[in-house]
Image (tube, rainbow, N blue to C red):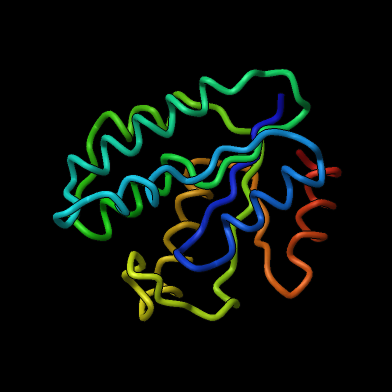
Length: 166
């Protein structure tokens, strides 16, 4: 099973693209656990919460049967790392360790060319370009195969990339 991660700053269409790819290829996907978790919090999230989110994402991913050609993942631990370092200037060592231990076959980095929309959970409308650059730098530093996804035909572009490279 090839694992394809959809990654990028907030409000770039990651969840929609993940679902569209899973539907097109008739394969499973893992939604972003962070949104579900944060929606239930009564207090602001903490670094401890980011660690919990990271562990739960892995748990959910590992529970998906490996019977399809692809598994599409709405974010991975690189997102937890970037999020933690951007907000708290550090990242839990477990997350850093797991980033190097977990294997993913291909990354689709979503561009910031979609309008930012406030949904009550998003935090960084003025830092989208900076965050996109951080994601790209992380993927390159980790030597991860990736493509930048932008434009109105994101889903079709992503389908073609998955067929050809993942």
